[in-house]
Amino acid sequence: MTSYEGVHGQTWTGRLRHRVVAELPPEKLLPDRQPAYVSSWIYVFGVLTLAALLVVLGSGAVLAVKGPSWWHGSSVGHFFNSLHLWSVELFMAFMVIHLWGKFFMAAWRGRRAMTWITGAICFLGSIGTAFTGYLVQQNLDSQWISTQAKDGLNSVGIGSVFNVLDFGQMLMWHIVLLPTVVGIVIAVHLLQVRRRGVVPPFDADPTVGANTSEVSS
Amino acid sequence: MHLSDLRPIAAPINLDHPGRYLHWGVIQISVANVVVIAIMLVLFVVAILLPFPKDRDR
Image (cartoon, rainbow over all chains, first blue to last red; front, side):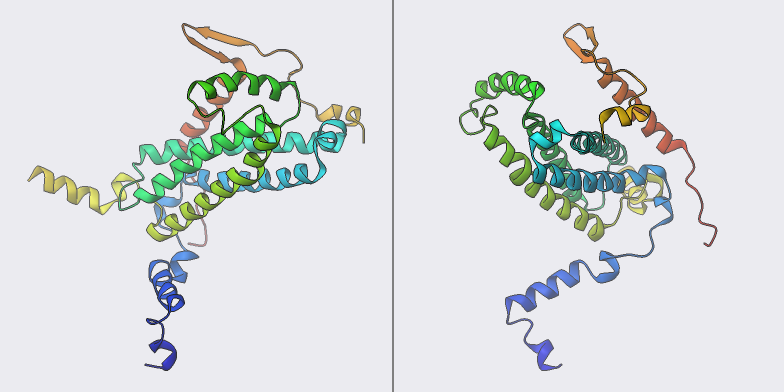
């Protein structure tokens, strides 16, 4: 044992490195092969969701830099405004189809509960992010949605801390707080997918047959 | 570039009017949302049934 290997247990960085590498060795983190059952279109919707998210983040960054007078008042601004809207539409649609596929595969099998839970949190967080996005359009639509939403939110007692009529607060939720949380949870979700692998179909999962025989015997 | 320059690639369906809504008891949903949900269901079924292209090198 070299002195380099000997100190890893005494420092937090060494212990963390060992734990991370043990959980996610490089061949798991960046695999170059996948099981045969992944050759199905239903397995494509996860990465389609991610691709749409990249367009959402890119177009959103441009909108944040240029501002409402640009996205409402110029042709290129209209284009990026529409690009942001339609990429979100695709993001939510792909994510829901991904969710349907994983639900009917019971994708929490094989110690994948955290993968499922982080995916569900991403879904809920994305709804909140989309909602605050509607509130910060700076048009009649956002005024209508916010004045309708305030009554519902006040009725459950959160209107004082989450004021949908406060444009500045909603903008910060939309472009800072929620994207940060959703981004972190998506990163954890992806690492969980790498850690446990993509869920196999029922007929390709060896543990399903084993469990069935245990139950029936 | 003016908006009129983009007219040839504008939406094939005129969306410049108030949305149409369907009513079914307490349920009220816009036609646009019904269309989106229908497309998603079709995509889901197609994704399950359509064969995935095989990699010839393997």
